[in-house]
Structure formats: structure tokens, C-alpha cells
Length: 232
Image (cartoon, rainbow, N blue to C red; front, top):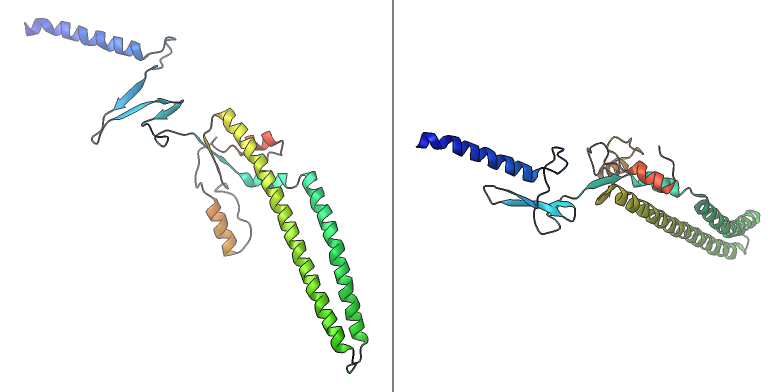
């Protein structure tokens, strides 16, 4: 009896195999499996159910239990070009010209006092007063210099923030187009180091967040094109 039932069991197994394969195969009969709602993978420490959550492969209910796509962007290339834009350069030139006028005026006062000091005799009673006038003028010159440095720094910070926001907008456009979830800024690991001090080298090592990355994951050129910048 067992011998006679063997062909039936084999035939039933083959039939179920065909049915299961057909249920996983696409209607176009192109060899692709699916669609299916989920796949459960057994493991020694518990099962994992893999499914599609908002078009992302997930293995849990938490956002952290999903496979997020990743890209890298060399922000320095974009920022360097954006900071050289004509409208930024013009504003910096105007500020430098304005600051130069104040510095030149303070420097002329110092030059005049220095010339007056050369003409004084060693025992001239006006020497102490002139020295005090010089010290006061020099402190004023230093304050003007510091104010100029602060003004240039504030303007540079504003322009860098504006440039960064432009890069961020372009990154979002490219990420949406390429369906990328996360973009990390980086310096390519094979880029040449700049500067010749240990501190500069260490900083550039720290900024190389990716020591190796697969081809196609660097979207720098796409972002540069989106910004209308030169692609190197």
C-alpha cells in the first residue's frame, strides 16, 4: 500500500511546488518573484518578518528598523564656487572699501604723530603730551582694526550660511529625484591634503568620514549641476 501511495505523494508535492511558485511569480512571467506581503525568516534567537513599509525594506515597526538609502556630498566643492559668486564678491569689496577709509584715516593720524615725534628734541616739554596722544590714537587704530575684522567675519558667516542653504536645497532636489533618504557630507578619502601642519592634517583626516564607498553613491556632480556650477 505504501508503495502504491508514493507516486501520489510525489505528484502532490510537485503540484504544491508549482502552485507556490506561481503565486510568487509576476503576471508578466519575467522570472521575478512577488508580489507578497511579507517574508518571515527563522532564526535561533527569534524570527524576523521582512516587509515593505513606505517603499522601504523593514524588519520591525520602528523607523530605525528600515533600510534607508544613502548618498555622499562633497559640500566644499559647492561652497567654494558659491562664495565666488559675483554678488557675494561685490558686497565684500564694498565692505572692504568702506573699512579701508576708516583704517586709512586712523593710520594718517598715527603717521602725523610719528612725524611730529621725530621733530621733537629729547628734552622738549611737549613730549609727554605727544606720547599720550600717540597711545590714544594707536588704541583707536587697534579698535578700528578689530571692528573691521569682526565685520568681515560676520559678512563671511552670513554668505557661507546662505551658500550652505543653497546647497541644502539642491541636495534635497537631487535626493528626491534619485530617491535617496540620507546625504552625508564628506571629503573623498583619496583627496590630497592641504597645508603642512599636523593640526591641519588631523582635521582633514577627521573630515574624511568615509574611508571607502561604492561607485555611484557620491552625488556631488549631480548637486553641482543642479546649482549650475562647474563640475570638475
